[in-house]
Amino acid sequence: DAGITQSPRYKITETGRQVTLMCHQTWSHSYMFWYRQDLGHGLRLIYYSAAADITDKGEVPDGYVVSRSKTENFPLTLESATRSQTSVYFCASKLQLAGPWNEQFFGPGTRLTVL
Amino acid sequence: LAKTTQPISMDSYEGQEVNITCSHNNIATNDYITWYQQFPSQGPRFIIQGYKTKVTNEVASLFIPADRKSSTLSLPRVSLSDTAVYYCLVDTGTASKLTFGTGTRLQVTL
Image (cartoon, rainbow over all chains, first blue to last red):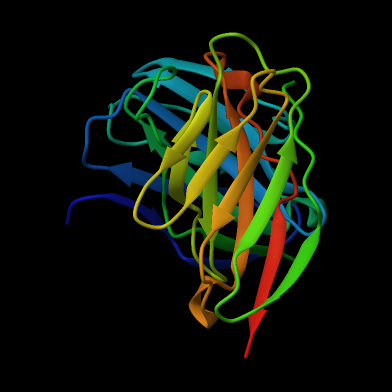
């Protein structure tokens, strides 16, 4: 299917476990992003990637690791999950960074609960 | 960061025009202003984008004054299905600064 997908949609894990959230886009967009959404904080950028093998930190990167070996995939890993990482995670992609007619396309989100 | 400030919430009746204002005092010369809409349990989706003056599409209008330090999203004749959270984003050419504010929760009632 065309678009941007995330898996799993829901995940419950325990403190200290490693968790990987998957993101896949079919547009060959250069830029991909991971956001977390929490009440009172809106959407905060965790990591982003400008192309395969190019990633960089956003506003709240601590506790997360990303990789991008292929243009279409951008997994987010919580190496040792903590309760403070309970959140809804959104992946997004964008064709280019700047300029007009240049929107971000968001996935449906992954609701992660860390017990 | 190109921080944005919006009202936390707004209420409207169906059929009215709704205007949501966002302030972005630190906007840079090459930045665009983009608005997104988010329904519960969904990712945000693009509504409209502008650089200056006025932009209109089939769902909304965006007004941006000359100093570009604020913008106003205008939704004509809202319906119940417009109940959502609306985010203003300063679309900067620096990826690390792409941060959304807390958004405006619009509640439309009969």
